[in-house]
Length: 471
Image 1 (cartoon, one colour):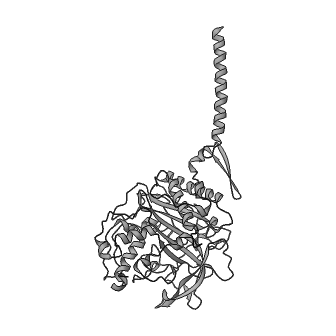
Image 2 (cartoon, helix red, strand yellow; image 1 turned 90 degrees about the vertical axis):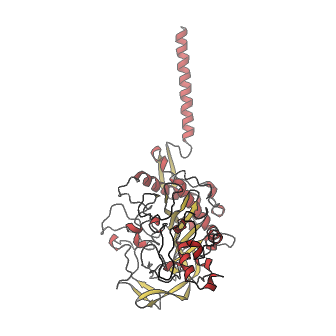
Image 3 (tube, helix red, strand yellow; image 1 turned 180 degrees about the vertical axis):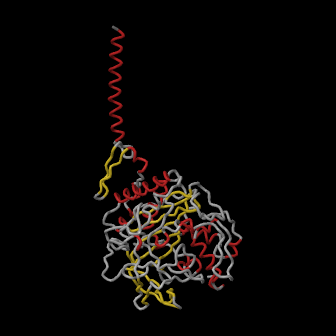
């Protein structure tokens, strides 16, 4: 009888514990990030997330919002804890850089240009063009990729601008690196200081009557182009006042453990359609119009470089180029899903993290604000921490992780599938650099060669008169 009562008591206790455990599981699993099934509304889309999808979720931190209060990322406290952390840094940095400062303009516009470190006059934005043997303008020298001009659908060239932040400036000045003789004796192993940033923005000229209400726009000067000896070149003495719209944005920034920089890129959502994983030259990429794509255009007509061919026409009086460029974004998040690689799991995590973080940020941004129309395309960095060394060519992906074929469709339009320049590190490396003309001294293999802004400053500094260098 006693054993029978004990058994009944045991069953009763077990039953109570089972109910309590079930209730605990129910309430705990309702928390975001550990739910068995959650539903999130993103714009007009409904996304269902299951247990199998939990590793894909990468969320915006609530401390980033509202946008006018986004704090600068903690570059020194960066932990390299996950792929998601790199994309969170990228998004937070984009929000911080585009946040209005005391002048009422986005913060990045208050940063100086690389030319300014040498006292060089910055007359106006430049189109991306053929390399110029004379070290005069950032965009005409040591360009990554093609010699092509990206032409919008109104026939105007896309223009570019570069910026460096105060940490970058302080590093250059404190080490006297505007003096080429000091550069030649600089410790090759020394990296840029944590927090150093270099930026590149792409801008479309707004045509009269063109609706660009969903873009960040501003008034600025651009350098005009002219024909000389059969080529289209910049005339540094002629500028034009125009309204420009921001269409692309590169960020390169130094964080703890990553002297190679995290390289991230952002675009406007209306720029161009994404190419599907499977396609042929005859594939129509989209049946919708985009800013740089005409509905119904076949893949074969996308990203065509007509530079230095008879097909390229230019009217100097109107500044109109033809033909226009049809852009297709080759890799949505900077990875090719059809490429055999031992990084396939990292690639999937990377791409899913970007997709979920883009959606997460949009949940917090004011939908009427122009910045809600921009999204991260991808980011790339070294898999190991503190792995930067002098004389690295980075011609393969052995050291890399993230978006391994990262391009901005408005900055690297014509090289998205070119294996020698199909991500940031193909061009941003630590190799020795040879000068554009014999009278200049080569640049030794240094860790800081990872920055094109620095490389250009080095060669510019040799081409300036002594009195200009001493200003």
